[in-house]
Structure formats: structure tokens, C-alpha cells
Image (tube, rainbow, N blue to C red; front, side, top):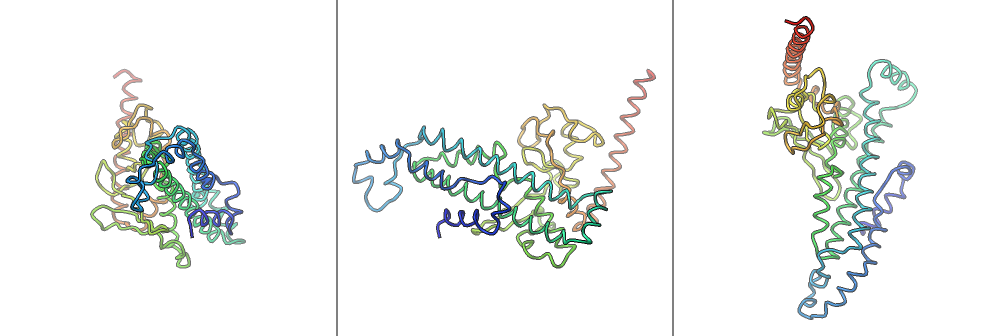
Length: 333
């Protein structure tokens, strides 16, 4: 079955109610844009050489234009908008789902009371599975349509667009919220033996040379997320994902941004840059990876305890130094 038909069945299948307010790739409409490309049809008809079009070589039969103004203006603009909307929908729903799981205080008590009357855990797992399928299907759709673009135009514009998506942080399968969703599944699997369905998609290897989280996707795809902090070169502790997507320990990220640990990453200067990609302004919208931190706490208890003691000691030290400086400033000596 062609992917277009599979994608259509997905959009109008059992999860149609769930996808009602979600953005998705307009796969068939974007394919029509390629088919209606006049400049490519004109160039394709001008390829009259038998040597270029013979021998059953499909790539040679395609027009060899490097770019198409019609497609570049309409196709890539619409695709980027759709990818941005999909990433935004995914981020919002995952944030809401995980907030319910890691709720504290009064909200946690209210959720506990509600759990007595309805099976919230199964509903959360069901929504998690739908979100994974949602982001996966749309990521595959984008990959397929970009491959189709390069095939039609005989160019590398599709590959360049994928690089642009990574640069603008709209690459769907590289979202830190997908890592959080994987950690959410593994935390459920550790606490509830009935939650094995879907959680087998994710695995976590702490004993490897570089700790990784692996996600198995349809179409024989596998994604690996490196959980090593690029600053301390150890497994991330109290992890934060900057808006550029790179993961760091909170203590390391605060040190790189020249702020105190107790002040937090939100207080970092707008000019502060990511230690890896050197992009500025990535600290303001950083994401605290609570599910990943909980996973490390449950799977690597001794390591997590040692790092917690070290971070608290550093926080106390920085706080004392900070208030000593403030006191000297106020009293003049």
C-alpha cells in the first residue's frame, strides 16, 4: 500500500476524534503542487535526448532543474508552516499530559481522588500512544514528500530543507518532548506491570559507554538520543533541554550561562549561547526534563543520589557567596 493511502487511513481512522484539532501534513495537496509544476513539465518535455532518457533509468528521465520558483515559494513555505504547527501541537499536548503525571501538592491529591472513580493511568497511556503515532506519521510524511520533491526535480532542495528544519528546531523526531514521552512510558512500565503495551518501543541503556535512550519506530526506523551532558561528559542529572534541543545538567547549563544554580536558567542573559551549537537566546525557553530525571532516579539510584548531594552542596556554596557579596555591598565593607 502506498504511503499516501496509509496516511489517509490514519487521519480518518479510529483516532479521527483525537486528531480533530491537530495540525497535520497535507500530503496529497503537496503532491498535487509537484504534479502541477509548469516549469518542471516544460523542462521535462524539453529533455528529448534518447541517451538521457533511455535504459529505463528513472532518475535520468526526470528533469534536472536545480530549483523551481513555483515549488520553492509555495511548497516549502506551506510545508514549513505545517511542520511548525505540528511541533507546536505536539509540544502543548505532551506538556499537558506530563504535567498530570508529575503533579505535586494539592493538584496531585485531587488527581488521586479522581483516580478512585476513573482509570486515569490507562487514559494517559492511550493518549501517549496516540501522540507518538501522531508525531511519527507526520515525520514520515514529511520525509516521503521531501524525497518525492528531490525525485521530481532531480535536485537536493529536499535535503537542504531538512537541514533548515534542524536549524530552526522544527525537526519532529528530535523534539525533547519526545524524549520526555519515552521516559514517561518507561516510568509507567517500572511502576505498573500492566503498562507493557507500547512501552517496548523505548529502551534505556545506562551501562553503555554513552548512555542512550532508543526509540523503535514503524518503517524499521530507530532513533537514539544521547543522554550525556556535553560539559561534564557524564549522564545528565536534573536535565534541561535548551530551545536548540541540546541536553545539559542544570548545574552545567547554569555555569555555561554564568548564572547561579538557585537563580535558574530563566535568568540567563539573552546573549548567552549554547555551549554546543553556539546559538544565542536558547535559555529563556529551556525545558526541565522531569520525566527523564525521574527515570534516572528510578534506574540509577546510587548515581542520582551522589549527583543530588553534589548539586545541593554547590547550591549552598553559591548562595553563601552571593549573600556575602550582597551584605558587603549593603554595609560597605
